[in-house]
Image 1 (tube, rainbow, N blue to C red):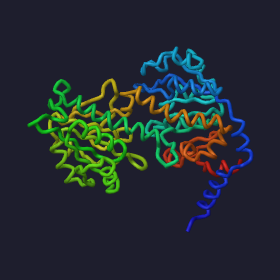
Image 2: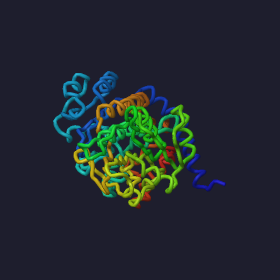
Image 3: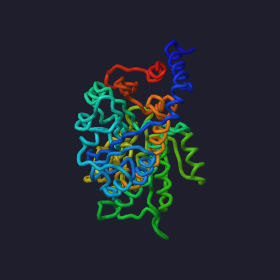
Image 4: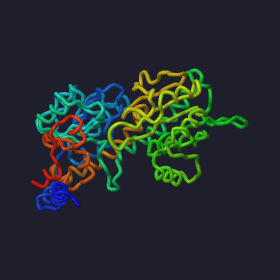
Length: 406
C-alpha cells in the first residue's frame, strides 16, 4: 500500500500535468528566449551546445542569442558563422551571462557560478562527481533554476543525450584501442581485424548498454573477435537481437571474466550504474594477469571506473601504464570527436528550445514536458534532486508538489 507521502506526490504529478487555461494561453502566446552560450572553460571540453545552423533556426523564430567569441573554435565553427546565423557576438563571459538562460555543455565552474544572476535558468551537464556543496549552495542562494541535460528523458523514457554520447563513446573507444595497440604507442603491434592466416585481436566489452553496444559494433566491424559481459541477461539478449548475429556473451562472473581478460588484447569498460559509483568488477590482480601491451579503455571512469587500476586522465595526457597494460581513462571521451558530438547535442537541444519558445513560461514547459522535468535539479533555488539532497545533506523539495501549487 502506498504511503501518504507517495499518494501526495502522485496527486501533485497529476495536477501538474493538467492542461490548465493559463498554460494553454501561455503556449499560444509563446515566449521570446534570450539565450547565452559561453565559451567552455572546463579543461579539454571542446563540444558546443548549438551549431550555427541551429542558431539560425532559433533566431529565425525571433529568439535572441548571445555567443562568446571563440566558442566554436575547437569544432571549426567561426565567429562569423554564428554572427551570420543571427547571433550577437560578445567578447567575454560576463556579457554572455546577461542572458536569461545560459546553455553550455560542461557543468559550471566556480567562476561561472559567480556570474550567474538572480533567478537565471541554467542548462548544462550535472556531473555529480565534480559538483560541490558550496557550488549548489551558491546557486540556491541566487534562486537559479538548473536543468541537467544528462538527466533529460524523451517520450520513450530514454536519456537521449546520454545515449548519443554513449554511441560516440562506444565507437571512439574502439578507435582509441586500435591506435594504442600499435607498437609506437606502447602496444603489441596488432591490427584489430588481423588478416588471412593471422588471428584477429580479442576484445572484451564489459557492459551491454549503449556504450557496450556501439563498442561491440565497432569492434565487429573492424574484424575483431568480441566477448561481451554484463550483469543483466536481459541486456545481453537485447544486444544479440539488435546485432542480428550470435556473439559470445556471459553474465559477469569473476572466474569467467578473468579467463577472457587473460586472452584479451583490448578491454572496454562500459558499465553505467543506476545510482552512484560504477561497480568495480575487475580488480588489480586481474589486470596484473593481462597481456603486456594490452589496452584498457575505461569509458566508465566518469563514474569511478570498472577497473580497480583506473585513474582519470585527460585528452592532453590520456594514458598511463600499469602492470604493462595501457590504460586510457578519459572521462569526456566524446570531446575527442567534438564536431560529431556537437551535432548530436544540437539535434536534441534545438527542439527543446523551440518548444520552450512555443509554450511560454518555463513553469508551463516543465509542467507539460515530463522528460525535461526529469532534468530539473534546482527550481527557483530549491533543490529538487533527492540524490543531491542525500549526497550533500541539503534541504529537498518535491518539484511536482511545487508545480501543483501554481
